[in-house]
Image (cartoon, rainbow, N blue to C red; front, side, top):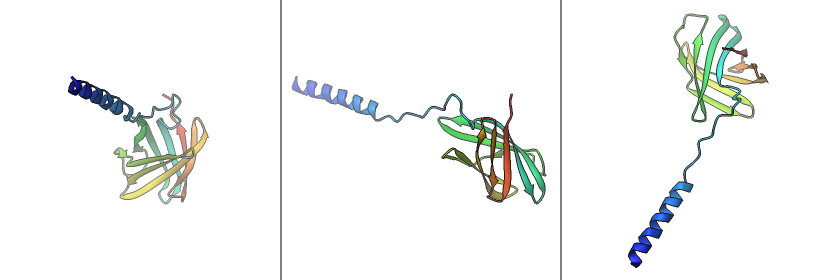
Length: 130
């Protein structure tokens, strides 16, 4: 009888400990600023201004996305390799025309972002309303 009680108590604490050790997945805010479609314009590159459509999606609390060039030779979709969010800013990392680049953007208002490509070229982004 003592063995059965011991195993029952052990099983109870094991289940309770397992339940408390589960990490919660952070939920996306109802008004997620960055998620959605953005029209991004990179101003003053050596090949002229570059227009891109950026699609950002929040999956399991983490932003992922793709970029679709609208100007230049490359027309296929580009996967964003990494997205960092910190201090009201967002940094997108991707490879375009065999160059690894990053775009740092910060909020202007709910519909506009501004920033720079590699700290060299100005970038403006405007939300595309669907």
